[in-house]
Image 1 (spheres, rainbow, N blue to C red):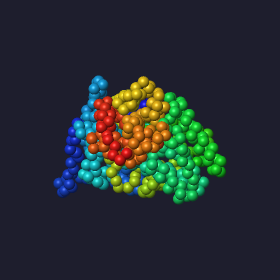
Image 2 (image 1 turned 90 degrees about the vertical axis):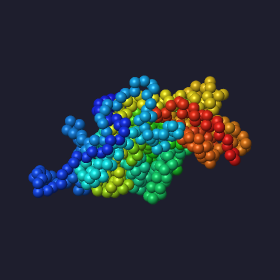
Image 3 (image 1 turned 60 degrees about the vertical axis):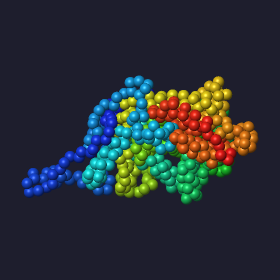
Image 4 (image 1 turned 135 degrees about the vertical axis):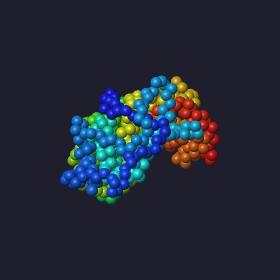
Length: 530
């Protein structure tokens, strides 16, 4: 697979796996004195002048980040943060990945990785080593060490997603990239801007679209999907994709009838929706959008590692902008994300200005996004080590593990909460209302309907508050989630179409026993005021 080939590019290096933090040891330097050796004079012979952003004493990040592999030399770490050791490959199915995270799994059943992630120990330690290195000599860090290592992180992230180096830019989080793309699009197209998005899109993205469009007098099309189609009456991925395509084409036809010009409009898609945990058929919808002359922006907050993300494929099907977080499924420390744009014209037009303008704004695509002022860059700097961790295990293996856990977890909850549905196959879960989409549209998250006395079921047409079929609300969802939290279970409860579901996340450290604890806890819940 493409991801296996990519693993070979990066995973051949030795991973420094740290059982405990080792204090920073910077090289000692003597103060100048009359008895010191003569100072080196090589600096006087450097006549190149400043080459990078502003007045930093480093090489151009544009050159470092895009240089051919045969000419590029990766920078050495300026510190030793832990003993060097090979990461042992799991030797059996009993390998506990939880040991590689800081999660308190004694007191908590943590089934909400999809919210804000959980950082790997090795990445956390590497980030702390960078912070200590910064404080030991701040100017050395900012002037000379930071930019070459950021350029290196940029390169390895491009390799990880099989992307082009010149199209990749490291940013702080997906919000920064989405603001850059949506704001840049409305700035360029002004009152002619037209943005489509599904009503199951992430809440803050809807706010960005509306805010930027109002500023320029543009138009917005909210594609109705949740109330009209969920749960999907589908038993396969192909059937589900056909439903998405139908909703999209109906929205296009409606916009045209209202006098909108669809060509050069922008389609915003979640790679995986937050509230409903559905993997949107990006390739199919992007191809359709290109047939209408549209631009395509993908909010891939849940994309990295969770999906077999191949930027060459994304480019082929017509994705113009891809934004992804590194702190979620990739499990890097918080503060690192990617903005990928393969089209040079779009990089210099729509992405001409980052949300925060600083020294690098006129120095190239990477420079304008890479340097955002004086802040903590350690999450971006530790990305090479985080990628080595996953590539050593094998990214295909990771996704297979997460898919298996998800399938088994749904089976456990279904047997505990909906024993009458035990004969239903995994392909029929959505049509039966247990999930909201067929299994191939889920992973590594899914929503599972709570027991009937809690979830409600508007399909029966009853609104009686004392009935199992009553329509539930977000307030009901909060009460249920608070109950789980008070009982040591971290798992979100979602209200979708008046029905309550839990959204379960499945990472490599999660075990079936944790979903069994969730199942038992939910059965103990007694609603108040319902």
